[in-house]
Length: 162
Image (cartoon, rainbow, N blue to C red; front, top):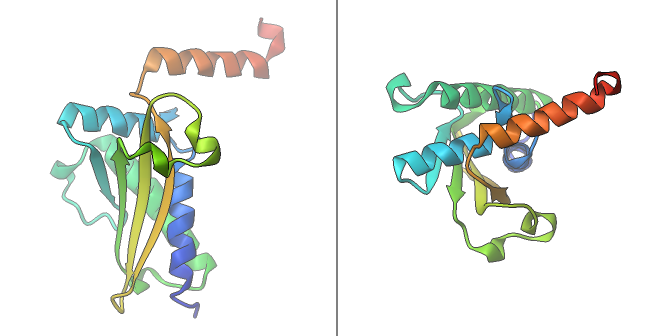
């Protein structure tokens, strides 16, 4: 059996993977979709339960897709480190929008939109806490802008279509 100390690395992996531009839902960046939802709700943050203990009425279908993807990611990470799902009592992922600019370092400072922080909180079955953190920038979900970039990527992949 693996060490529960591995949960700190798992929390960091989850946070950085979630904040990544490769985190998409239905072909669009998940953070941008969540940011749009938060703005509609008049909120500055979204919290996801990676153990899927939330009632369906409390979340949207996109939230559930994202929760399911990252719940599976968590399970794979646990297995890789020799841990079981029972070793995790709580797994929450919180995305906070409008964090202070000072939190952004290096490449995170570039791009457009508002600064965000992604915080993964894991608690093991012994009550120990592990927090992973990642930052970046996001703008509100804009299908027309994102479709254009997807179309451009598609044209690059098939130069004979141009």
